[in-house]
Length: 342
Image (cartoon, rainbow, N blue to C red):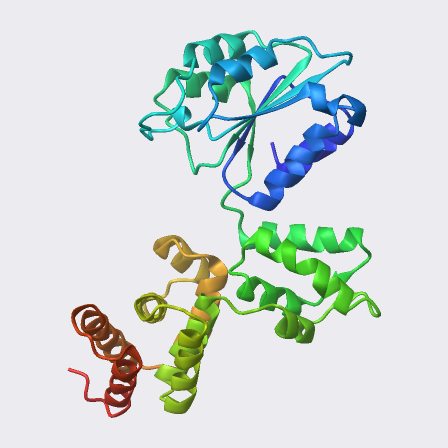
């Protein structure tokens, strides 16, 4: 079932006995939890809503709650989180979990209880009997690995409910600056709406002004400055990152990854791969591939290769010497501009 379909059914007070919320996306998880909580009148929520974290609480306690009759009400909602016993993970210590009891419950759920299992994992261990039963008995909602189109639509829908619009350029910039992370985007919307309260339209100028760049975005600018051989701009960005307490090794690792992506994208483009094919082959978000395709066309294979190998050498120096990282970066930059990298 899709996330939007689930909310429609819950808002219409249409429920099933067991739900599995698979994947990790904080914003959607919060929206889903709120929708389930609203199934229980506010005055009954304290007694008829249970939250159980399997890292610290036994599964048996959650099942005891699920099998109990509602307290002066018609429905009980029980949330189970971090059910690592559904995965291939091994945990030392912690509570003992009555997995057989859950198996029995799934086969004969209590009509007055809605059991909601939040499994913030990419996938479960399908070899396990309990997982097979859960897949059969529960309504599954996948909230992880949203594509760019789904994320964009959720953002636009959220704005529409507040009578706002967002320009395509602003939406793309918001995707870029937040690394296409839905929860981060949703957290940025209130201040963007307040800033644009007059026209009720989110503009690219407001995104540029209010949404901070992440390390990846700063390094994206840094890699372009390096490859364009703009030494002053590159050094200014690098020094700014150091001032922001970013570690030189981390900066260099992201920089290596960015130029490697440009190199891979250029190679695959030359072989006739489309944007979608490249994203699938490299397992990279399509928007990152789109930006890489736009950037890589401005750089030669020679510059990309020499930049990449030079940064690998810089990484070794950062790990093996006590020399000043900024000095090492400046030396790399000068060598790259002079095309003397071996």
